[in-house]
Image (tube, rainbow, N blue to C red; front, side, top):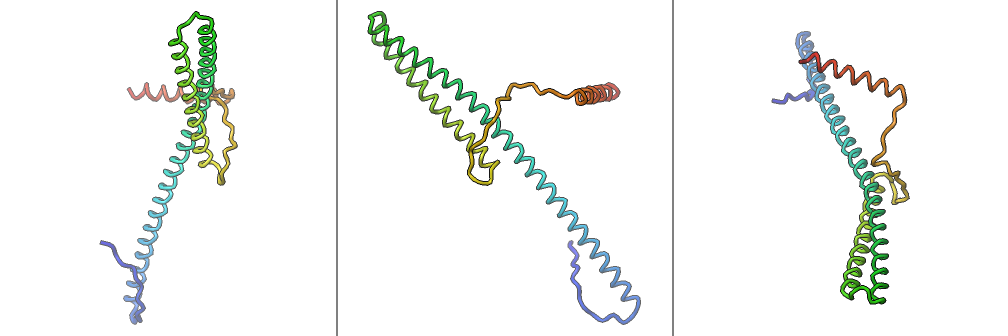
Length: 178
């Protein structure tokens, strides 16, 4: 049951009619103000949710880049080891110490590791592009990320004491709840 606050221009002749009209327009004003306040609060809430979602997306993309770099490094090491194993196996085959089937198997393994290296390179490129699209207003993938996936965050002494105090207070409040 929405009330309409449309203004109609009618001449008011007596004082009680003017007072009733004034109260009616005031209640219409209050109702429209409340609707506008509610709409603004809802818009702020939607903007907050969207910004949190954007932050989560950027953080996920950042760590996808960091993980992609680690996967690429591992794939590069594996491809290098596969190539060395292939060369060793081929040298031993030429010396008559290893069967030809072992050399073919080593070649297949080396090819598989090179394919995994290409996949890791592509995954890192995609992760970097995804992050760059989120961060930069124009196309720019010249970003560097530090390898901090396993780094321990250090706190300054003031923050450590604040963290210990809040931990002690939360522990005390939990103990008093029981």
